[in-house]
Image 1 (tube, rainbow, N blue to C red):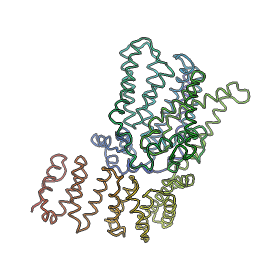
Image 2 (image 1 turned 180 degrees about the vertical axis):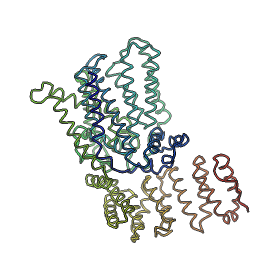
Image 3 (image 1 turned 120 degrees about the vertical axis):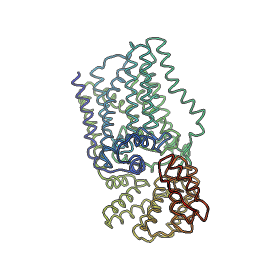
Image 4 (image 1 turned 45 degrees about the vertical axis):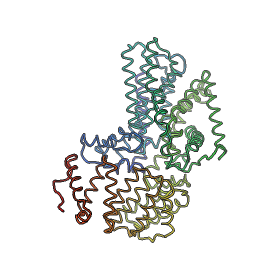
Length: 632
């Protein structure tokens, strides 16, 4: 038995690695840049505890910044440098470990769902659990979590969730433990939850998963009243109490972020009914054409009957829910799998102001549906009259693995990935834009004019399908000036209008900053009036958050200082940004550099003493700068 189990573990790990080998040569993508490559705290050379702590605090994704994932990126960079191969190998290793944990956990699920929980694992359930873990390991819906470097956040959070679940299962199985050891065991599970949350906020779902496990597998059976009270107290502290605190003190912030979304909370909730069925379809009947890095072409539900599939999807979910309740005793596996799937979507598929569709949100939820697939195959083919259940399982694994390998092969090159995604999602602005972006990067590396033409062609397609996005129009302006292509005035007017009117994201802000830097280096023949109008239109945007606005005001101030007649205005802009963000050292450094660089402006406006005070403060507090003072 030990050898058999070890062999299964080896197969799981090898399968997780082999299936993703075709995608290893690929590069970094989208969010990889601003989270990893463009984050100086991640890419600082030379390991140090101070550097690790800085990387730990450097995240901007989510309310907590996902510090544990950011620390892992820092350590990854110190070991493998800027090579995407190193980041992907770590992600695949995490996925392989998760596959092993799924195997160890699911076999206990099957035992628990078959009747009163027992200590042993039968050969039948070990085989079913192995198939579930193997099918999950090679399932194409898990590809973005594994090959997309930044999605380590999702994989790492899942690792700690699965560890917490396994510890909890073993803890509940060991009824002979003393109450003291039981309490310490619960604290260990809570620690796994904390580590999961520090990797990504959805780590908090660990406690919801455990609640489902307790209700459907253990049924709150304990060896004593004291043990039951300990369990109930644990769930009150880690599940009920936090939910009440959020509802009482943070309910007014649940809808934060919708000011930059092209849909309302009600529209998102209605659309998610259709999204959930889309996910179920992808898991049960995966087809290469249905997957993609971006799904911004997914139609928004503007009402209960707009489109009519919204009503049908909601009705279907209601029927599925009641079916799950009614079949709990007849088919506990089906009920458990469906409830597990919905628990996994309790955060990201509700009313939170997130993007509408992402495949990686199914990383753990898919386990429940894969368990149902395995259970159905085992029931249909357990007699082996025509086909044995093992043969069918192996055939299904090979089919799913083939689709995943095909997708991974596309990921070997950013251009190939962008082209394939754009073909599969012709109405996706992000997918079409990725083609133009990657061709422009290729031109910058090779200098071959053909890539400029392809980039322009792709950006034209992007603009044609864009309804409210500013990015493709900004990118077209930037591409044109980089290559001495005349910019049409109507294009500029469209840029101004969209920057004023519609929500903007980090890619738009990065593009504007790069255009300003390019102009300062005299590499972009763009007039000052055009850049000033771009900045002015951006600052008139009501959707621009204070944090992002200050970030762009800092870029604006640096650019403005290059215009002789606007240097005093630039100093005032930079001073305002620095005063509003005293904890961001770079803003203060930029202000001092500007003040020190312009003695004549300072003397004319009487600001020399302020520069000296700032320099002294930087020296005393941060050890930056020297003792030199400006003389009036």
